[in-house]
Length: 222
Image (tube, rainbow, N blue to C red; front, side, top):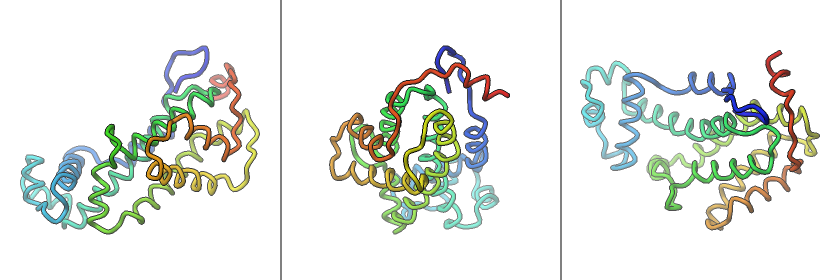
């Protein structure tokens, strides 16, 4: 994260700890990423544990050390996919310029679109996996809940320190906005990031004035 009059990036402790706590690493992480790539390219039913082990360059015995069944591996892949969404919000939060609401709202809109859709405008490959497993709605509900929690923990308190919050039921309103924008992209895929930003600003009644808060870092470090 950077702030006006200061080019030194500051990585929020909350965001870093969140990522460290929720991503699989090492051999287990490699197995999850290999399985995810295979699920997305050839489907879950067509992917065997032996194929995952070969792709990760480990023995089947080692794979079974980390995952006792295919269902357990599938769950780990779904967990990893869910973190994509939350990580994208955390990374946006780390890089945003505090007080520059119009600019950062547009960046948030672009982040949300890139998380849901590829460069060609089509849905991410993981959606096919979710449809095959029949858990798309359940997965998106989970992602929405975690994304709202991330925003509430990392963004709302900072905004509230220098702006009045003009809405009530804040987490619930974020749920409405994020779910609505995701649906809007399907109804009107060519909508601009600027228009999406305007919709978010109007719905949440955000203060769009640009403010400089040089004392923010000092107060943050106290």
